[in-house]
Length: 179
Image 1 (tube, helix red, strand yellow):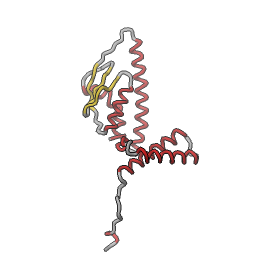
Image 2: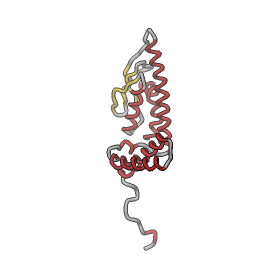
Image 3: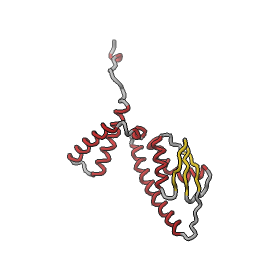
Image 4: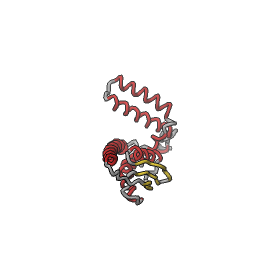
């Protein structure tokens, strides 16, 4: 028997629950450190203890983290998604305020059907919630890879135009996060 024939016992990859708990722990610890803005020993120890306890207790219940790409590209896309969402939120608020203050109230409401390329259920949920939280749009239903969205000022009810106008910007970042 040669040295190359020897294999170590046990799994070569961590079990899914362990991997999920590790991701949850890492996410919680990073969030804790960002909120505190300090790397003091007390802050680190507290963060490690609390994040560890939460990860051990809730790892099974927080399976939404299992689809997130915990890579530099995925994390960067998450921050860019938040920035994009905030920009769209401000733009939509200003547009809706202008619309409400216009005496003729030029609305053209419609429910439009849009398509998403996202396959991860959490990615789709984030997309639907981002659309709903943006004034002037409301996700009414998700059926397969289609979303039905109430649009206060429907520029066009064409499937492709509505998808490009409402979904594409959010989806760009969500694909990197959950792709």
